[in-house]
Image 1 (cartoon, rainbow, N blue to C red):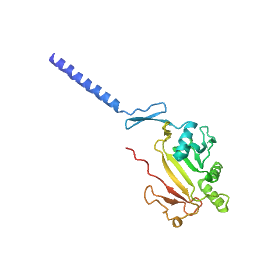
Image 2 (cartoon, rainbow, N blue to C red):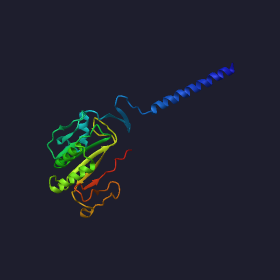
Image 3 (cartoon, rainbow, N blue to C red):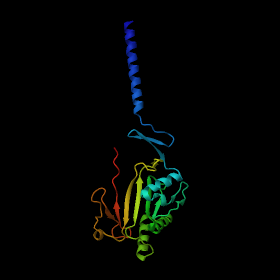
Image 4 (cartoon, one colour):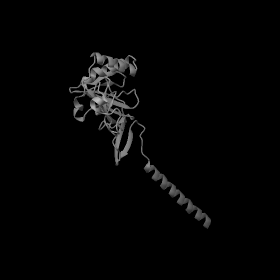
Length: 227
């Protein structure tokens, strides 16, 4: 009888411990909803991240590539969810924003000065014809030399890019996206403007495509550190 009682007590202790461990483990799991909304907890605050899968989301996230004070008046163009290249919104300031292409992996939106639009539009047209990147480069190089295309030195391009395609609908921020800046300097070289052709260190400016129509200063900021 004593052995039976001892066995029952020991079994009860084991059951209590297992229940406690399961309860502890369940509290440590990070919940992920199955409705297309990803729940992430940061510093005891919960941010609801949603996929960029509507025209409204494409517009909102694209504007994050533009300077904050200029977003309200930017023109926005790009592919909508139906795969059509459209004007999503007219604008009245110096910026044109190109929305992320929902049919391509990752996130990539751009904001550039409106005077760059002829150059950008020419590139889109050539790619739509099936031209390769090298062919697009060669054609625009020839057209820049002939004066058919022009780029005023100093015009800028802001590129917001990242591997994820979810965003916070309250702030329109894309998860883990970062900005890269381009300043066009046609025909410039390392010798003419005094920048190296490779970055000296992360977050340092350098000149890319030196000596060509697409010569530009590249500035790739470091991603924000997360606590």
